Amino acid sequence: MNTDTHSSRRQLPDAPLLAAIAGRATSRRPVWFMRQAGRSLPEYRKIRAGIGMLDSCFDPELVAEITLQPVRRHDVDAAILFSDIVVPLKAAGIDLDIVAGTGPVIANPVRSAADVAALPVLHVEQVDAVSKAVGLLTKELGQTALIGFAGAPFTLASYLVEGGPSRNHEKTKALMRSDPATWHALLDALADTTITFLRAQIDAGVDAVQLFDSWAGALSLADYREFVLPHSTKVLSAVSAAGIPKIHFGVGTGELLGAMGEAGADVVGVDWRIPLDDAARRVGAGKALQGNLDPAVLFAGWDAVESEVRRIVGEADRAVDAGATGHVFNLGHGVLPDTDPDVLTRVVELVHSL
Image (tube, rainbow, N blue to C red; front, side):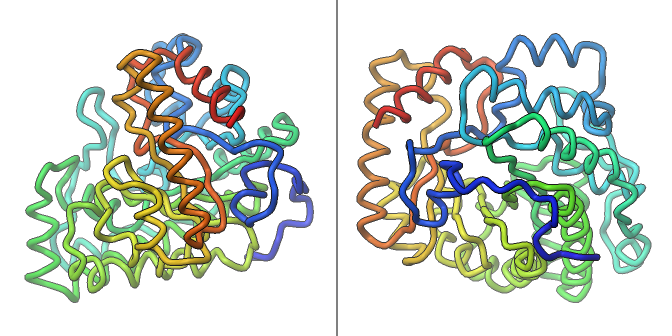
């Protein structure tokens, strides 16, 4: 498959998101929100009524409409493709569902070398609906950047091994330690799945990609380096030829930021637990940072929200002085479902004014 820059890719030299990542001057400070297309929006709840999450993710027209909703409402500087990190697993043929109030549930957890050997291989035509959605979006977004995304191998592995979300990841860590050969075989296979999924989005025309390692913060730095970093590096390296920005994010990863930066992303996402200027020193020079407002602060009243936004912007400016190439304002994790969307709109307006 051709992974060079797509011949019909939109040219967005003035898009604030792409300019900031590249270290160029921007017309305004770029801002978007993880999980901006979701339950915080009444229009999202209306259009999703009666439609399951996974069914929604495989309907190109619905994916496009949901992806566009926060761009219309908030004037954010990026759309992020509406999907779920388990979509490529489902597309490949793994028996799973997304259960309301629980999350992804795997019918047959992966716990042995035989289970790993039996995992299906993802083929690009199995995510054709996602490619079609990207094509629809690139026609509608004008100068707004479109971010594709995928789950990182470790987080996908955790779902597969645990059978669903886990607080302590005990089965995952047990497999990692007791049978490292099977562990690495599992993550190698999942890296291939993630690469296929990201390349499909890239070839369809996304302007950047984000690799989510949602559960990486559960690991020590030593375990991350030994059991995870090689596989995340494989993914990011495999999509580098496209020449589009690569963002890497995990929750609770303050102690892992330096290693995550080594994986090959152009942008490292930072959660709310660490100041951005401190994060810049941990990541090292030459990469942009993304973040990092605590999503819960959005419930605290406007004075508190404004104070936090201004503090973060100040820390971001110091991060750039310390060697970061740029800053993309975001939350430190996803928008919470009960967030007032009008507060998000005001945050965008404030960030754009600073």
